[in-house]
Image (cartoon, rainbow, N blue to C red; front, side):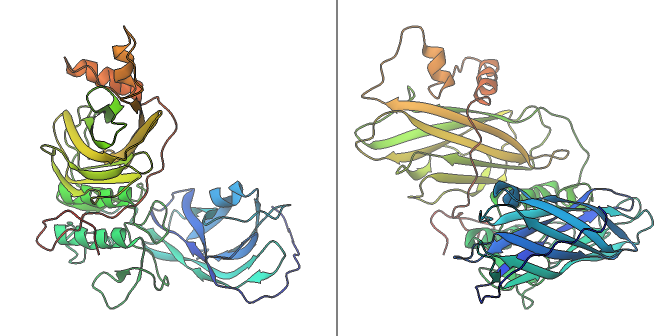
Length: 456
């Protein structure tokens, strides 16, 4: 980009610390466009408007030919320019002709090229200089957390080669139920931190972020464990082991031969006629999964979004497979489900019950989506599927429209699996995607059992 020089006058101010964190990833020699995201995490009250930073790396093994603006900065109307100051350093400026505040999230995407002769090992991606300013040009005290690129062997690494997953504390290249339980604790806490005194080097809650994030924290690396990220670990458990794979988002893959299958689809049935009780009471919601012919589902998670004020009661009837996480009694709005042992039937139905407050009226929506893993598919999404329902005091069925009610959340045709699948494909076209949110899981005990209720 030539010799580009920017000068920005900034007044010094003493402010609460904000943090820029470089991500961690795995790649092989000769790979190009290897993504290392840079994420902003500003404390409450901070208003970040512009950023300057240097990205340093080992220029003998890595090159950084491109840096693009991240989603959080772009959403604030910012642009990004970068300039290589030496073979080991690239300077980056993120700013805009506005005073918009940049929200927490990814502010820059560093796209590295790995040298064809790069030796296997871990290469630091450091941020030795960072400078953040608010809309008035005052500096915000900031700290930076380095990331890394783990370069594997020329042909990639396999089981027993390279570094084990952070959750694999006994370095057995398998994931056990207690090891999953440990990461459930991070999920339940909402965030985690570096703690050198623990077997895995991490602990739940707020604390130091000086060091690389946990391997389960990859989408994006933000010091929080999401339901999808936890589901990936369950996939390694159910596969009987895992191996290093630099081409995947987390740098690992489940053991076993890849198989073919269609995408997973879901069908939702609400109550008996697609209505809810206006006088209050309970409502049963059934979600049927069509596994699309996969030889084996290794992981499955579902997030259901219910109307405001509606609360979770319990599952109803037999639960297909075995749940690791389900909502606690009284949880509302976002209801997470994660299977320890996913159902293997082509069609499997989960039914849950919600409490409907009295006096509800008008149209309501129940929406849901999720992800699944198989031997050949990682973190593939299904949905969103939205059911539109009315109160039983307002709904008047229209002659000849029974099939439409089924499509929008009433009873779907059940006379054949083909009918249900057809409805499922129609449902997958409805409305926009619903963000998955974290909620309290059912805690997993040391013996692998779990119980209902909120986690402490």
